[in-house]
Every structure is written in C-alpha cells, then in structure tokens.
Length: 198
Image 1 (cartoon, one colour):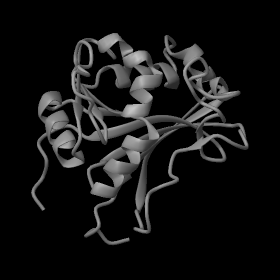
Image 2 (cartoon, rainbow, N blue to C red; image 1 turned 30 degrees about the vertical axis):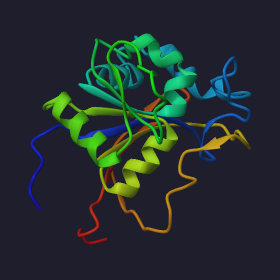
Image 3 (spheres, rainbow, N blue to C red; image 1 turned 60 degrees about the vertical axis):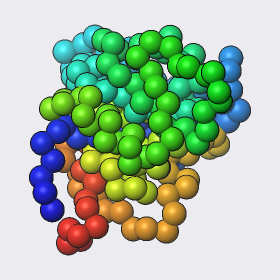
C-alpha cells in the first residue's frame, strides 16, 4: 500500500463512558441534547498548559474540516469559518438547489471525494472530522486514519451514539496516545487498515 504524504484524517469527539456524543433530543436551541453540555466541561481547560490545552491547540492546527451535515447545521454552519479560515467539507446526502453554504464551507455528496478534497486542502496538516455521521461514513469507506476521543467520566444513559451505524465490518484500533486531565482522558487511536494483522 502506498504511503500517504498528507496528514491524517482524524476524528475529534467528546464522548461519555457509555458511548454518547450528545444527550437526547439534540436540535436547534438544544444543540448538545439534554445534559450533553457535560461532555465539554474539559474545554474549561483549553487555554491551559496541560493535556486539554495541548489537545485543543492541536485541533486548531488542523488544515481542513470534514463535518457531517447535521453537525454543520446544529453549529449554525459556523458562520462559514470553523477556525482560521480552513476549508470545511460538509458530507451530505443531498444539496438543495440554491443552498450555498457560507464562507469556507462547501457541500460534498461522495465520501471518497470528500476525503480526497480535504486531504489535498490540508496539505501536510491533519484533517479534523466532526460529527458521528461523518465519522461513521469515513470509517466504513476506510478513510479514517485516527480518532482522538475525549472520554468523559459520565454515563449519559441516552442520546446520540458515536458508533451506532458502522455496519458489520470488524475495525481494529491501536492506542497511540493517552493523556489524562481533570475530568477527561484524551485517547488517540490509529485505525488499522484491513490488510494489517490483528
């Protein structure tokens, strides 16, 4: 397999211990669902010199963003700029005529094309992935390289799960970094390719 010269496509996602990335009833006006804001308390330390500050700075050093459509809409389309004017590729099933996303965002309907465009735009920097739907699509298509899971020590009990619709394929992960901080463990996994031995 040919080595990729670009940076990794990497999911950044806060998740409860029972696998939820949003509380129940996530919708406009309650974007994180009921009690879902609990998953983001670690961001109180994003300006620190500790692990959470390090992870946050790494996220903002990414060169492009891939987002699911639902995440993009719930985030108010980020007013067209997620961070530093990097391109935002919104993976969606359908684009309405005349619906032009703002700023640096563009809609893409094919996961292969989305990954290719994002890698090219990011150059040697990582691509940040947002949203459970986009993450699952990229994993199914074999285009997710790494996952940075911000594991929060809470059981939400209900809501939107990160890995609900992956299909039946077995995916092996290698833990490549573990950073402990107040109220969160930042876990970085490398996604093994299907031809790699388990």
